[in-house]
Amino acid sequence: MHKTARHASLAAAGLLALTSLTACANDASSTASTGDGKGTKVKIMVGGLDKVIYLPAMLTQQLGYFDAEGLDVELLSEPAGVQAETALVSGQVQGAVGFYDHTLDLQTKGKAVESVVQFSQAPGEVEVVSTKRAGDITSPKDFKGKKLGVTGLGASTDFLTKYLAVKNGVKVSDFSPVAVGAGPTFIAALQRGSIDAGMTTDPTVATILSKKAGKVLIDMRTPEGSQAALGGPYPSSSLYMQTDWVNSHKDTVQKLVNAFVKTLNWMSTHSASEIAAKMPADYSQGDKTLYADAIKSSLPMFTKDGVMPANGPETVEKVLKAFNPNIKNADVDLSKTYTTEFVKAAK
Image 1 (cartoon, rainbow, N blue to C red):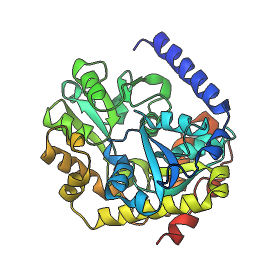
Image 2 (spheres, one colour):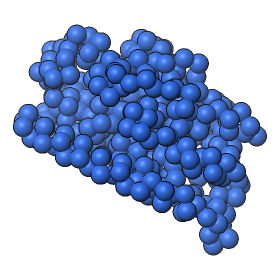
Image 3 (spheres, rainbow, N blue to C red):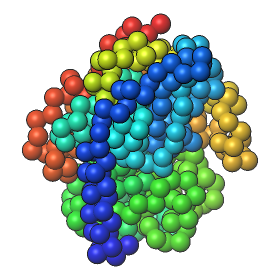
């Protein structure tokens, strides 16, 4: 993407985020109500329902744990976590399944949002280099002048790409982030050469490797990988909600958290192929073995109990402060970005 086009799209994205953020945030408080005898209705926006990093959302639905708690949960999907965030703050949904780092970013914009259950302790993200460029991109030091794929501008893949660059001496202005989504759009961009490398998750990673379209440069699917790349545990996938809504709907939030903690526990005692078998048939895209492998690669990122990992918020703040001007000069109150009240009370 040309620089001018990129700046225009960045400006447009910024404008869009601003208008969404200023939209009435109170709408959500009236939406969760008891509907047609199916239990309390809750809408949750997921930053890509078929991404393995957000797998607990659909798996909880498939295991029947929402129903068991007396909830009627509607799961909606957007291609990038930043769009899930926008849906939450504009009041279209009551919860968002996305990266915890959005809660810090939103606090600096005057929005009180908190993670109520933490799915993971590592990003689950992988920096993949196109096979054609594998020779000249051997570390983030080589990002200079390159086109790097992210799910969306302002998404967590964008945040993490910027951090890896800055940490390795490359300025944010030295490379071009290109929004290519995930799945087929990401793979096509890699194959066409519209991006030289990019950050994505499973099952996209597994598909890229099977097609020999790219190679893994940095693997953050495990706590060890997160430690090596980011210097600590990086709590990522979570269910986050507006603090006001949480405080006024504690019973509903507790039921949601009970369901998710049960799922995380179930995941920790079942194999990747058992987990894959529970998911909707189309998630495997016709290759069940590849899909189970994708889940297996990402399983180490998940928590067993939904509890925020020790020092996780501090790592996220350090990463964001490295390149995000909003956060660099702000005093973030980390204690307001998450709560363990509900996971500790979960059955």
